[in-house]
Image (cartoon, chains in turn green, brown):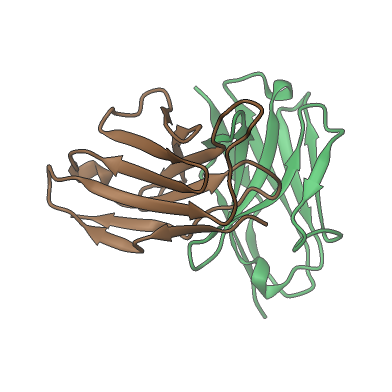
Amino acid sequence: EVQLVESGGGLVQPGGCLKLSCAASGFTFSSYAMNWVRQTPGKRLEWVSYINGGGNSIFYADSVKGRFTISRDNAENSLYLQMNSLRVEDTGVYYCARQTTTYDSWGRGTLVTVSS
Amino acid sequence: DIVMTQSPDSLAVSLGERATINCKSSQSVLSRSNNKNYLAWHQQKPGQPPKLLIYWASTRESGVPDRFSGSGSGTDFTLTISSLQAEDVAVYYCQHYYSTPWTFGRGTKVEI
């Protein structure tokens, strides 16, 4: 069974930083592209970042480019999102999502709140 | 970016009745190279993460009940729940994967 478990969320002030983690199990992690997708307080879903299985192809949404960094450790079956210069509008639940044709498996998410 | 517009925002359906959700993309998500529509539907129940229901506009994900069906092509798509069950109360999102960035509709809340 595919399992994705996010961690690392919390309350942070504007301008602060957080590092999210996603522990994967139940599949050959290195064979799959992975994504971070966030859900805003208004329940909108927004793609944040993509990384391919080998970690050498990476894309970001314009809204986070230059502030967020996605990475993965295939030996540890883990996905990461380093978030710097956080803004109030980055508040939301962050999901890691496995990609096949599209997002076929989602974790339960971790809540990030950016507020002073 | 491709904008996905869903309608209605919410609907109330009696148990056993049909629910129909519409999704329109701002440009075609039909690939001429493989004649496939790059359109998916996800279901999100209260307190849970999204779950993939349908991809390629009409292919059900493994384990999804056959009361769920997707149709449409190009820019106009529909998700139909043929006989609504209590466990189908959720928000349903359409999402394209035709080009980056992949984007979602704003969701349709289905209630009893």
